[in-house]
Amino acid sequence: MALNFAAMGAGDMIWPTVATVSRFVIAAGGGLLALDLLGWTAPGLYACVAAGMLAYSILLAISTTRPAWHV
Image (cartoon, rainbow, N blue to C red; front, side, top):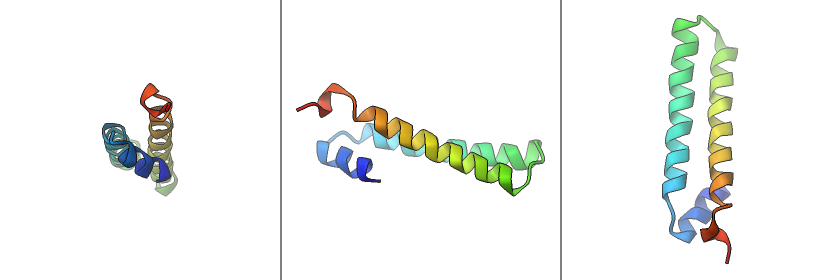
């Protein structure tokens, strides 16, 4: 969450937006796939939510290594 606010302060909101959309797609789409098509139970859904949070964190961490962040 702190990296999201840091990006807001830097005036570069594309990365947090992409990260949030990817988190939602992975969590919701993967969870739907896990529950409906694969027949997994709650642990499969939780794994998809965790994968979405991991993708969110990685994308935000990568966004701070861009040259715009080096002052």
